[in-house]
Length: 489
Image (cartoon, rainbow, N blue to C red; front, side, top):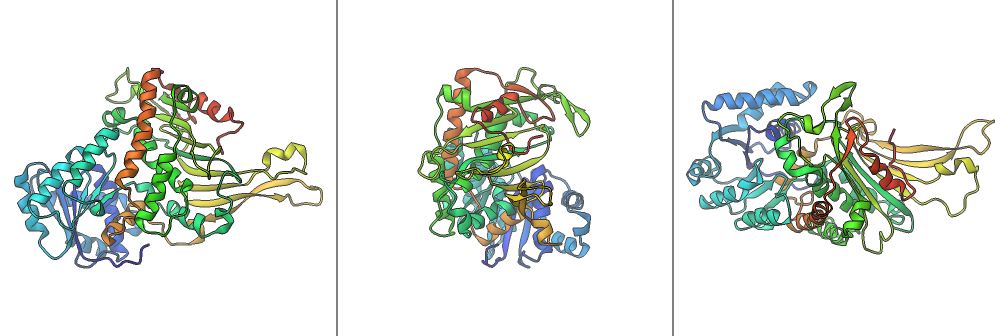
C-alpha cells in the first residue's frame, strides 16, 4: 500500500444500484471502513435514477452488503458507521438540472471522487454537468471499462472526459491491476536479481497467460454479443498482464514511469497480416456441454441469444514483441468462457540447461517454470528439478515447487479484494494502478487490426464443448511450436 495518508473525501458513486456497485464497490468500501482506512469525515453519495423513498434504496445496499461480505467479516458496529456515511440521491445523469442538488450535497472542503459505474456513453455528459455546477476543479473521476469498443470510440469517450478533466485527475480502472499477485510482479522482477538477470530471450523460451472462466454469459448476452472475448478480456486484462511481464525496469515507481514502460511494450507488439492471423489466432464459441456435472447450454442457446451470432467466447493467440529483450520469445494468450475451470495464471518457461546428462526418458521434465497464480488461489511458485528421494531411485529427477502461497504464508491475514486497493489508491491520489489514455489507445490499435483481419477472412469461430479447454485448434496453435499449454488435463 502507498504510504500517502487518506484525506477526507466525498465519494460520489454514479450507478449506485447497478450490479457492479452492489456486488463489488460497496463491499470494498465497507472493507476499507472496517480496516479503518476511510477518514472519519469521508462521506458516501449513492447516485441512481430510481426515485421513491431513499430509505428503500439504502436498505437495498445494506442487503447486498450482507450478501457479498463474508459473514465472519460483518461487524454491526462497522455497518452502522458505514450506513451513517451514506446518503442516497435520485437523479438523472444527463439532464443538467439534476446537478445543483448534487453540488449542494457535496458541499465544500472535501476532495470529490466521482466514480462512473455507468455505460461509457454517458461519461462525457456527466463530466460536462459536473463542470457546469463547479464540481470539476480538483475532482478525481474514475472510469470503468469498457471505454469504447474500438480505437475511434475509445478516443471519443476519452476526449469527452478530457474536455473537463486533465489526465492527472482521471483514473481508469482495470481491476486486475489491483490484485495482490499482480502487484507482486513489480517486486518479484525488480527487487530480485535472481529473476531480472534471467528475464530476457537468452533465458526464457516462452510465456503463457491464461484467464479462463467456468461461467457462461450470466444474463449479459446483449452486452457481450456486441463485445466478444477479445474486446472484453484481451484488450484490457490480458494485455495489461503482458505489459507487466514484458516491460523494462522503470526509472522509479511513479505512475508515469511505470506506464511509459508499458506503452513501449504495446507499441512493440508485432502486427499480424491475414496469413499470420489464421496461423497465430484462434476464435472459439462454446456449444452445449457440462460444467460441475450439470448440463449447460451453448452460447447460441443462452437466454435472449441470436442463433446466427458469430461472436467469439474464446480467444487464443500468439503475440510477439519486437525488441531486444523479447526477440524470438512468443507470448501465448488464452481466455474463454465455459472452460474446464476458473483459472488465471502466468507461466514463465525458462530454457533448458545447454547440456543434458540425465536419463533420456526424463528429458521432458527439464526446464524451470515460474507460475504466477492470480485466481482462484493467489500464489507464486518456481518449479525446480531435484533428485527423487530413496536408496533405490538412483539419479531420478522430479519437478517440485518452491512456493509462496499468500493465504498460507500470511496466516489469517485476508487478501484484500482488488477493488479495495484501487479505491484506496484513488483516495490517496496515486495513479500507479490505473491505465493512461495512450495505453488504452495502443491496446485498441493492436486489437482493432485483429478484428479487421477476422472480418476480412470471414471464418466463423471454432466450436468447443462447454467444460473443455477450448477448440482443438487452440492446442495446435502452441503444439506447432513444439510446446503445450501448462497444466491442461
